[in-house]
Image 1 (cartoon, rainbow, N blue to C red):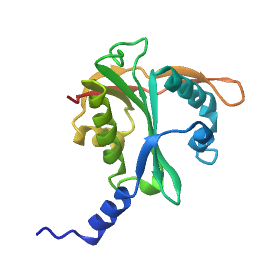
Image 2 (image 1 turned 120 degrees about the horizontal axis):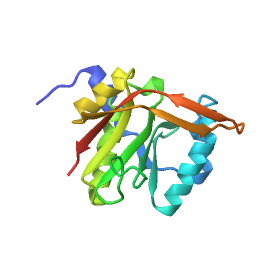
Image 3 (image 1 turned 45 degrees about the vertical axis):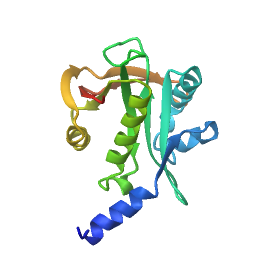
Length: 180
């Protein structure tokens, strides 16, 4: 019989209580995390609209009694087929776990559940971009079987919550994993 350390047992207990499910419309503001991500309000609304068209999925990790403690979005189809082609390849983005819950197995739990869902939908590959400076996230993806396949310039624009165009310049690594 394997005996778990107290720390391992706490991690297992914590993650086992998390519910991973699709975001509800009335929870869109909860993704702003008390103002930290308010500037992405329009992006969240646009992504939610894509879920209604069947081209995206918005997952949230909910800890009962606490609320949303993590999120991940999946793009099923986009203008860049090397990221998502609507048939075999999907694209993971906006993957966040609240700081208090990082390093406790939640990210791995979310990745596994999302990958399993995509396999059930007939997808074979999952791609993502991770900022070159985000070594902690890259290590999580590598432990989960993702491989760096390309450099991504990471240049994009969006309209913030005040209606201003914002420019992002965040060089990244494109990573992918064969999930089926």
